[in-house]
Length: 175
Image (tube, rainbow, N blue to C red):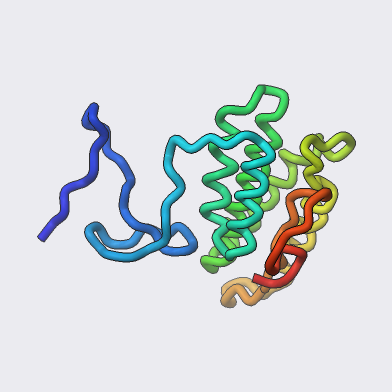
């Protein structure tokens, strides 16, 4: 039996399907999945960074991306590239964990390039230099794998801020 697509009050389609831990949609009407980030959630910068770090530590970079995307879309123009770049790094990590080498390489490079201009004066104690190094290392390890082979790289969890101590595996450890 086909389950009809969810719609908002104006009739626009919604993507309310449950998702797995890496953000892949599950079948319509299926039970389970992980909690979704509300589409309209916008957190202030420090709260967004802390929540994104928590999600990264849990191995949920797709959900971290959704948190960062909400902040990016509401950011002032002078910070928009920073937040978009952080979201792209999380999507790059998502692609890697899904086994998509090409998508991972592309998004890690885009994210790295977007945040690079903030390295000399990073707002919110964001570890821009550390994130650039993390992305460069990850891209180099991915590029060194033979084409057509399964992705074997075990990424470290990126650390978003230099001024925080995180519980759990967030001080770099493999996902």
